[in-house]
Image 1 (tube, rainbow, N blue to C red):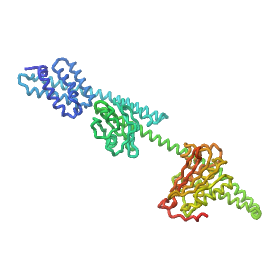
Image 2 (cartoon, rainbow, N blue to C red):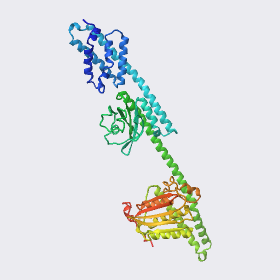
Image 3 (cartoon, helix red, strand yellow):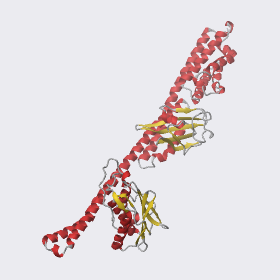
Image 4 (cartoon, rainbow, N blue to C red):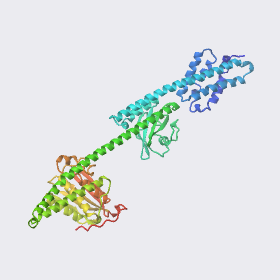
Length: 548
């Protein structure tokens, strides 16, 4: 009878043919070419035909290391050894009796394969411990970046390329990207490495790799970017990236986006996918914490702003209302001390009435400004209204008060359904604003025109333009341009906010154009009939009397 060594040496090709035929059907072999399947096991089989435990041990370790790099699980590697034993036994059964090894030799062979399997499991346990330490190291690096961002460093979203560099290193990937979810779309927030898609977006319901990842609770892999039917970022198919794997970024509040990596080599192994899942889980927590901190900071800033606004509000009431109130009180005291004064000083009653009216106007402006800040509409009393006479009367009144150069142009009569009181206040605020900040030697022009189904009122003045950075906030309550603040001219910063409130309550708009070459022009545009633009749950307001 032959020895085991002689038998294996003589039947080496047949044993490997049997093993390779069955190994191809194993799930572990999918995606591997034939040379990759048989690159290490034949050398281990040869070691069984030669004496020397050390050589066999080295062959087992080499086979284990190779299979790990190819993405095999430990059970799949052990399964390969078991399959090898079955192929040897099958070949032994099919051989003539005189060529078969002694039964004791076969017992040795089974023991050797069992020891090899045990060695593989032992190496895998050691490997997993080392891999766990590696994962902890990369999680610690992520934690360091997140902690620095929370304690005054650059915002975490600004440091996502650093985060991706860590992910890329942890998975030995050649490319990595983060896509964040917003408005039903995934958009690239950061990308590093080969063919990084910095401006890629895809709908959440699209047939794309990114959308598939976002919709799945498990990792999604693309084994070959050249043949997949899924939509991929432009350039990845031809940029050298062969395989992809992606996972969700899932926080307590729901989906945030996805994290995915690409490689130019073989598909990512199972342990690499698990590593990516661990990194994604912690990254989602860090992103959510950063978002919560930012929201909390915004709320704190809003509370500070609200407190400052209340203090300003009280200051305005205490300062600006004190003047007309004191004047009215003084006049009333004079009358109380000498009732006959009303016969010789009728102006005292007029003065009281004028100052009370001024205080009423101030309080009304403050209340309406507060409505606008709260997102509410300014209440209107709609009726027939003629913008032409309103503009002419305001121009005349301001000329008399300020001696300003004010001209009107356009249509002398422009009728519509509006609130006369609100339009008068809005136009008064625009013109007095132009008087305050315009060039005194150049005219202010009020224009009244019909444009289609809308009325357009413009107030134009010359002088220093309003800087572009100041323009967006000018229509907010208590907002003033920096130039206005530096000028020392008194003002609450309510005028333009009330103009905006008037425009929006009528279903219209107000806009601003300002430059050194063309001057400053405010444009108030209103529908000719404001009634269709009123809230449906409001009753029809009492009409105002027509303007004279």
